[in-house]
Length: 436
Ligand code: HSE
Image (cartoon, rainbow, N blue to C red; front, side):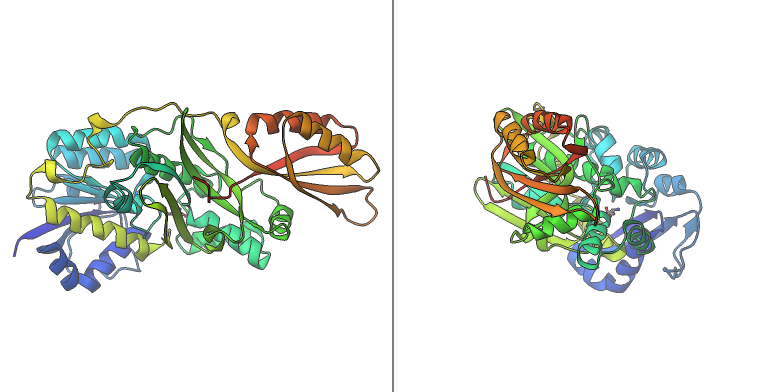
């Protein structure tokens, strides 16, 4: 049987998962790959107690793996974009195929890496970079290749979904849940990547590039995390029949593409509202198929390993065939990708949830609704809730119909100037996810 030698760089949460799943399921994996997959070397700074390495040679120098003449496939699982970039380029220069779970690396340097790989007749696979164990890259590039994608929207960060779900269903405190997410191995090395939406923006950039056949780019991608969300918004949203999810949304419009990551109210009846815990889900709306939903674990050791190993199997199956028969990294040849204008967030149309504190006296709401009407915004519902005892102010919560964000900005500016309104006007975008 043909032997394909793998070198794993990084033995953290994902690396140990890859080692353990390959060891456990080796016979089935080999049968599917039609070869003998052998972990020939591991490069890691330190051993991992979750992983009982048997006779596999270990080096503390990951570049030794990238240059090892016996190795066919380098699996980059160290994360980050500096050393990981050098490692991947070194592996390619040394004629190795690459498998990586590194979304930051692909989002920031993907074009250069893919171009290098294409020119050398090598594969770079990255299924685990987006939505952990969900085979969304394969689904978009292969399963949906007949379609024009209208939009996609997804929960693509497990850590933020875990935090929001725990806050919503158990009333837990943000920081406590984040610590638990770190302990469970969901969060990035720097968890601000998760909670500030950076990790989701990397993943969205990758999905959008495949969906719309555009070059990979993070430039201008609107990114807002969950750190400014107030527990009261989660509760009010629930009262109004919505859940708050942190979504990545990419939409093809007549004037270009929208790319945005932000907390979003979604109706509780929508499928995505029921996606809790560390689970991810990506909805794709496309012209031929309609709407599809891809759902599963978005982070964690073995779910992510599942995607990494699927890539290893893909490489092992295809490495002896002619490169033109391989599935291209971004779904089509790099030369076939076309730039598109990116819409500014002010041009994007969504519904809005608005919350502010206003004096509890006659006429206050009519001033607010007049401002909204003048800005061309139609109100869907409005509620008023008491603030703590003794306060003469109340919380006003408004849901608007779909409107351009620049109209909302104009209205917010005027509402904040009203003497009867105290403090800032907070807003969260609303999506219905059932419109083409
Ligand atoms: N930190 C990431 C998440 C890991 O929480 O989704 C998977 O990419």
